[in-house]
Image (cartoon, rainbow, N blue to C red; front, side):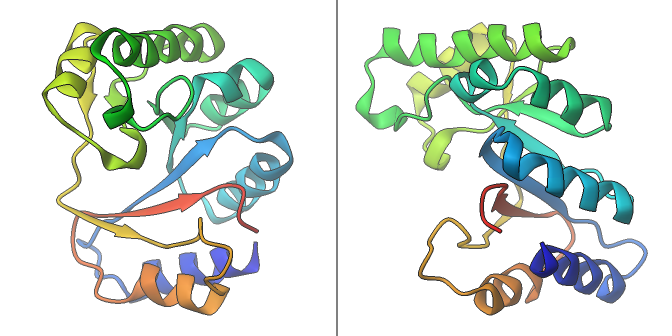
Amino acid sequence: MTALLALTATVFTQASPTKRVALVFDDGPRPGNAEPLLALLAQEKIHVTFSLVGDRVNENPATPKTIAAAGHEIANHSQTHAHPRDLDAPALDREVASAQRIITAAVGPAPKWYWPPYIEVDDRVRTAVARENLAIYTPRRLVASMDYDPKVPAVEILYRATTDISEGTVILFHEWRS
């Protein structure tokens, strides 16, 4: 977690008071990874968005409750994290609706946002999301930290997440990358 601490210090100490960024942690929750991350975020007094996968919520129902209780935003990130382009319309509807139901049951308030797996959005995704009264979160500027690629070293992740960051940037991470 030292790379995240360095990132946090870099992003927030170099930013002007009016420059705001959002950190999104994808594909969880994974208890062994979420707990240290939550402790670090609490220590640094930072709130982030966790985009949760329904299957992971089923495996670890206490972790999303802890995330929500800590004041972090929760987004629906589908039931299984399947590529939307590989699903027919009924399967896509199930991906969105099942995750919404499971996440809501685990944390209480229903997520307001849908963060599409692989950032794949088409008319079928828009329709499935609208049926659940969700909005697709579409950042003005998205920076992928590349932390999902084990070949990318921490120094590169830090560089990507702190270089050329502008107002409203969303920086994408995964809680499972130490």
